Image (tube, rainbow, N blue to C red):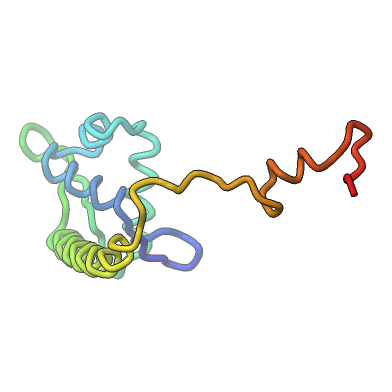
Length: 134
C-alpha cells in the first residue's frame, strides 16, 4: 500500500520500515546501514517524507553525545501507527477474500490435452513446408 503526494510516494512499506529503523538506531545513517540502503538514498527518502506531510516525520538532532542523530517525531510515530493498522486491516480483508478463491484452485494444473485447440496439436498438423494439412 502506498500513499501518494502528487507524483511522489509520501509513504509506503519501505518508508515505514525506514521510520522504524530510525527509531531503533537513533540515526539516519544507522537506519540506512541496518536496511542496506545507501546514506544518500536514506536521506532522499527522509527528505521526501518530510516534504510531503504537513509536519516533519523525522528530525535531526545536532550537538554532541546523546543529542546527535535523528528521531521520529510524534507526528511521524502517528503516521507510522496509522499506516501499520491500515496495512494489517487490508491484509486481513485480502486473506478473507482470497480464501474463497483458494478453495476452488487446483493444487497443480491439469495435464494439457492433445486436441485440435492445443498448440501441440496445431504444430503436428503442419507439414514440413509450414502449410496446414487438409
